[in-house]
Length: 150
Image 1 (cartoon, helix red, strand yellow):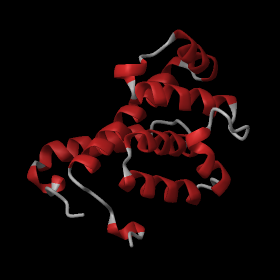
Image 2 (cartoon, one colour):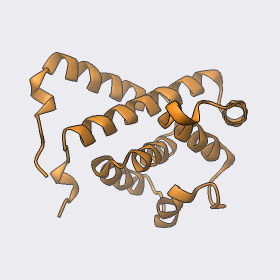
Image 3 (cartoon, helix red, strand yellow):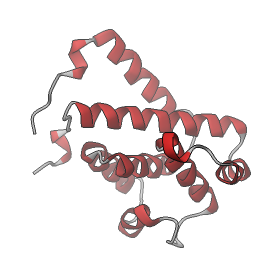
Image 4 (cartoon, one colour):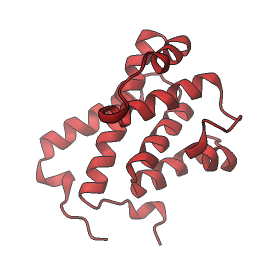
């Protein structure tokens, strides 16, 4: 797989702004292990191998177990996720597939029960960011070779 463009250099000012925004959202205060689960779930839905590779590695560094990583695609049936994680994962799925799944009241109610309004916005922006990265990585065949691609 060859990258289709060097997105880091073709429009450096816009890319720098995007990267800075991504970093700000990541540092906004939502717990990092939860954000990694959200990034992984959105990346599973979007079929982004680069982001799956990157964020499963990061989740492991933060102490995530192999079992929970393997079960993430079936989180609805897996008993190992907290109510807060379930609310975030449900919101992630609906926001990632918003064109077809929308944002139903029941999904929002679960989110609202677990997250403050400020956290809801921060989580939603994190979902926007990972979906953006997924689209860039898939669209431009991006991958991070330093993450152990074989």
